[in-house]
Image 1 (cartoon, one colour):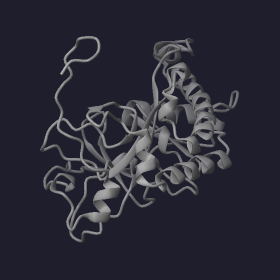
Image 2 (spheres, rainbow, N blue to C red):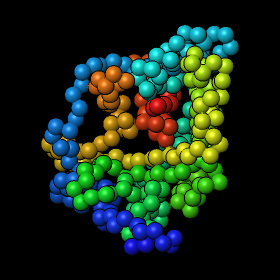
Image 3 (spheres, helix red, strand yellow):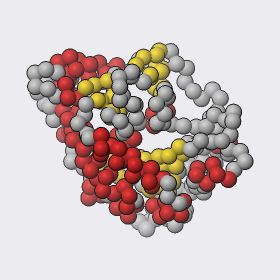
Amino acid sequence: MESAGGEARPVLPPPPPPVQELAGAANDVPARYVARAGNEPKVTVTAPVPVIDLARLCQPGGGADEASKLRLALESWGLFLVTNHGIEATLMDAMMDASREFFRQPLQEKQKHSNMIDGKHFQLQGYGNDRVASEDQVLDWCDRLYLLVEPQEDRSLDLWPACLRDVLHDFTTECTRVKDCLLREMAKALDELGDDDDYFIDQFGDRADTHARRQRRRASGFPGRSLVRRAHQTSHPARQSRRPNRDNKQWDLQEPSAPGCNKRGEREAISGSVLFYRS
């Protein structure tokens, strides 16, 4: 198969049905959604996720301790949580409410924003499953909505549900403010960069892609089945995620005990009062 530009398109397996449809109709969960034994990495270290207070970090002359914590997080972890970031709780709640409203719509309504072109060709943006490259690929037990939010002029607004459009724009604007603040503070925290506070911002340029991912996970209803779930994007408050640190050890990342510190996966799944950054 060739694209309009004459380039050959890869032949991909047909997309699986939405998880919403499978969860409501199947007598058993399909094998490709079941986690395979032995795939989980061995955990060797357990530690809390670093938490950075952005308000304290940006305080003139008063953020030295927070800057040291940020540098340690960057050098040793490659990820951290952010609290006191200045995004209003009402906006974050509105983002979550709009996401729930979209996923509660009838399947045929959500399919209007499908990530399958003509039902055959996968595109990254839109509603549906992740890209399926092979028949035996293990799939994530969720349906997702994936959208490019920056640069603004490259947005495919036809794929943006009406219930999400305005609040996602406002939310992205606030996240961009936080992102730029963090990037400047990261540059300040690394002595090797000298006084170039805009080093990381300049590296990204003014046309860096930013995507938002909203997803809904469903209870399987299949006792004894361990379903595939992307650890860093699950929203359960008691969940733990695993990742290697800079020394290639496997860390079991435990939830901080600070009130309101609910870990979330990347900027598109923000809730409560915390942003999650992953380098």
